Amino acid sequence: MIEETDVVDAVVERARAAQKAYEAMGTQELFDTACQAVAWSLMEPQRNREFAEFAVLETGLGNADDKVRKNHNKTLGLMRDIKGVKSFGHIGDDAALGLSTYLRPKGVVAAIVPSTNPLATPVNNTINALKTGNAIILAPSPKGVRPLLLLLEAIHAALAKVGLPADLVQIAPVPPSKPKTERLMQLADLVVVTGSQSNVRAGYSSGTPAIGVGAGNVVTIVDETADIAEAAAKIAASKTFDNATSCSSENAVVAVDAVYDKIVDALASQGGLCLDEKQTAHLESTHWHGGKLTNKLLAKDIDVVLAETGLDAVAPEGTRFLLAPQDQISRDQPMTGEKMARFLALYRASDFDDAMAKAIEIQTIQGAGHSLGLHSKDDSRARRLAMEARTCRVIVNQAHCFATGGFFNNGLPFSLSMGCGSWGGNSIDGNLNWEHFVNKVVIARTIKERRPELDDIFADYWEAYGQ
Image 1 (cartoon, helix red, strand yellow):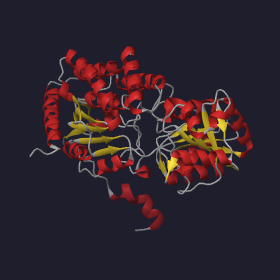
Image 2 (cartoon, one colour; image 1 turned 180 degrees about the vertical axis):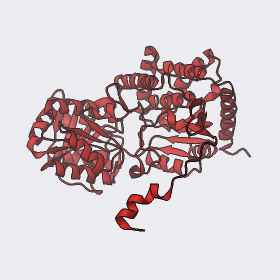
Image 3 (cartoon, rainbow, N blue to C red; image 1 turned 90 degrees about the vertical axis):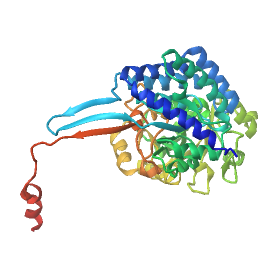
Image 4 (cartoon, rainbow, N blue to C red; image 1 turned 30 degrees about the horizontal axis):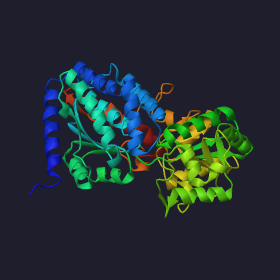
């Protein structure tokens, strides 16, 4: 009797053979050409538009115009980051230490990709894998299967043009199932998981080296020194982009009392409708049932959100997102957590210390390690957040969902997967990039002995504390 997981074994075997051949003929030029082929498979404007529209149709998440921009910018930015980078073979010598360093592929990468980004994320993972000489097997969510199959047709055609086999980039056997995904993770050489925390935990428990990313629940602080109009415009742009599918979209804004009313007015001018207590309660009961997100508002267009909540009768023309004022932070309050919809929680703080405390309290409940936003002209406050909050990124005066994964006007690596360090239960704390897809090999030779005397190490300690 053929087991359900036997088909997974066959896919991995083909990937392993393709990877072995790819590495054997590997040159940096070949690997870079493969990356260009995959990148253009998505970035070519007509395909990008076609794929983005199909992804929204299939998943019911996000909007096509924003996905077109996301697919283009994230892929272009990644290609910029890796251009001219040596990611294979001999990369350097240190004569003084007698060391030589080489980079080698991990092997076969299993990448678990979410339905929120069924195109940009798999392309990002594939480029990183091919840049470093790996093969990759992409495991989509059920809703993401058909968009990924369409994308793979284009990728395989592009790889064939440059003389590379389709087996370098494969999809896990469809239809998806938990046993198939578990088997894939067990057989792969590296597991990369972007998506639900249950998938991340499964990756870490698979027995295979795994890179998982933590839950998003971005809190942005607006202090009394901020440019209010600019902050509101950036928050609105971030909150509404792709209908808040990004883990880096603001879920809460904490404004200090001195500018609270100003930021509410400024957000209103950007299309933010501030709700009253009754409207907020109805929004909450619509979006969550039993503490779990429903599909009614999840990553939906604003007209759907307004109709489902009954706010279409009172919302002014030009409404783009909702503001839900809150005065409680609690695990029992759904508004404290991630929304993935076109609304955010709004908190008032007495001063910056209070705002920081509220942001930390929220992310202690959900989102620790991911990122915090700050709109301020006082850089010392960003430095305080870096040392006092449990977060791996502090995004200053930027539209958060664009900036966190790298953008053309900041220095972070372009990525759609943000590591959250130990605070988020992750093995990495930076943006996932090509460096996570290689093994480093070091040749160590003998050099002149460098043994210190005890005084060199302990003299100051002995002087202060004795022997």
